[in-house]
Every structure is written in structure tokens, then in C-alpha cells.
Image (cartoon, rainbow, N blue to C red):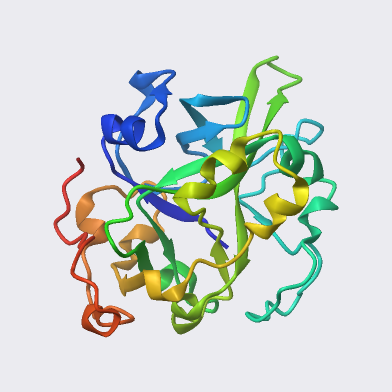
Length: 259
């Protein structure tokens, strides 16, 4: 489950990093607590040179107003026990809600970090999870769709984050899932309609734990409307000491400033 994440990089940083121009720059704002229902920046397969702002919470074109998926499991109905060692079939390609989108409506979900907590405590005990080595912003693998509101005839564009099994960092947080994070060199293939489906499903793997770290933050972030960079300040020790990973303090978010 990835129900909250962080996007605080400045728009010009996003545009340069993803080689895409914002379609509606007036919609951009830094968000330390991207919650369901929030508009957030994505780069989609139908406009790979644009940053668009879609709703976090996927609603299939054929769905109802009540249907909302924050995440799409890469394993589909396989791996019900969330075995971190699972490397079997990617059932997402068969799920009715996602099988069209995974084939032709993929997107990059632009993020600086994501937020998770223990499965039994959730955001009552949250951790900020980030990539080491100055890997910020980065792209989570997403799918998107458009839905026509039958009452208002307004078109809603929305997205979900694809999840996979937990690496060692998420296991230490005692959370069984992790968002799929795409290597920079795979982002273009993820967006391309010419990429074979087998190559797409090969990308649905956990991010290497040695390139990720996490620290506890205030449970104040549990409130969807909570905002402010102070929410991202650590209140305890990292999962892995940076020295253990032989990495410098590249992405210290304590007192971070959007840039």
C-alpha cells in the first residue's frame, strides 16, 4: 500500500529532470503530504513530454463514482500472503480494473519520497522512505485512466501507484508492500506504447534496499490536510545508518527546502 507520498521539488526541477513541460503550471504546488483525491504531477504515455496534474486515486473508465484504487498490485491475485520472496506471475495484466491500463495507459508518478507505517499501526507510526544517492525526484510506476461523470459530464483523469513486494527497508518497517520505483533508464520504456508487455512486467520489482532508507516522522501526517515541511523532520533514527551503506547524507529531508 502506498497511500501517501511527498512531492516538494520545484516545478522547474521536475521539468528538467523528466524533460517535460508543465501543461498547466498554475496547478503545481509543493506537497509534503500527497493524499488520495489530491491532484499531483504525472507524465503519461499519451503525452510523454508534458507534466500533467491528475487525481491520486484511479477510477476506471467503466467504473462508478464509488470506485477508487490508490494502488494496483503487480501480482494481482497471486501472492496473497505478500511473500517478499515472490517472483512469480504478474497478475495485474489479468485484473479487469487494470489490464487495459497496464498495456496502454502507463504513467510516471513524480515523487521525492513516500510514507509508510507498520501494517498494524499504519500512519499512526509513519516513516518517510527515500532513495539514497541524491535520487530525488524519482518516478513511481503508475497507471492512469479517464472517467466521464454521468451527472456533470466532466472528465476526470486519475492514476494509481503500482505496488510490489517489500524489500528489506519496508520489511523493517513491518509493511508488506512497496511502490514500484522505476530506474531512470527505464522510464522511457515504461511510457512507450512499443515496449513489450513482458518487458513491462519485468520492471515490476522491488527497489534495491541498499539504495533506500527511512526514518520515523510525526503521526501528524496522518491527517490528509496536514501540510508543511516540518512534517518530514525525523523523530528517530534511520532504518540503516548511512555509514553502513557507505553513502553520504545526500537526501536529508530534515529542514528541507523545496528547490
